[in-house]
Length: 455
Image (cartoon, rainbow, N blue to C red; front, top):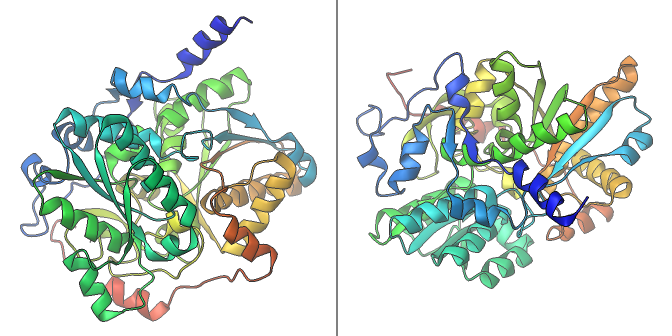
């Protein structure tokens, strides 16, 4: 095969459109509501935060949304991402299952997040925006938006969850290298942050708090918009380049998956892998079992309520219907910072409610054990978030071993753990503890859910 032929084959694997699962659902998702009126929001309600192109994608029911050429040009830096078969892991598990993984760690920032960061930066640039405020948990999203901001000449301000800010200094350094500024959240730079610190000066922060700070900056500055790295429909839609590529690659391997596995925090990498496969199923294609794996310390799908709630802790955002632990819920400081969010993406929540996916929750030490086994078998150290997907895939493979059945298992290895080695050091030293949320705090947070007549 010549280099030019190889390039053409890879070029054809990069999707030309994002896939919108809303077009194929048997029931439409619940509308986003204005917190003051309780009525569905309109474009003008969201305009202070997002460019109009993204607002249109957020409410779109079109099956395909074309990827602009400038976005696709940037995608070519790392897409298509590789799909591997984990043969050595299969051997270590002595399982008849075939295990495949889609590896998003080859992106410029080492995770799946640039798939939407590049798109969001592009649409903001098209609307003449010069500044974007955002939040980040473990730092994958913040570093990805920093990269995208550098590509399109946009100033990026990142509010990073404090526990991750302290645990992951190299993520901060990466953001600064790409030209962004980064501050620990809760901070003294916003009224939202000051209010949290007044109540709890030692707050470790949460994605909900960091979102409040970033939204406040965007809402009070005309030259600044807000960008979110997960949860929202347009974000999850941008990530479907992962699943679309995986469909082609699995067909090339003649091994269409029986089981799909992904870790879930807000839902972006999970949706990116599984939505195109679920769309195939809903249009009469092959059946597939879908497993969402979440942290036991922040289990929105397995322990939350499916209800309207705010996306941020200070209740500044519109109301979305999702599986939630309550906007005021602050999870303990476990190492998978990207999964420390009180709610699940509305589309993922809707699919869970329709029984199109199932969910399991694991504690962090068993996920790190799975990640170490994967690293020693396959030579890639997963991010702490991705370890949840590895654990889920291993459990599915061991189930096949117990049943004596062979199934094709595909999971999304959404990023590498090269900036998370402190967590691995803690694990190897025996210092990594399984954190559990407070039942009393969860009950209080759920008791504070907004009352919405539309439910």
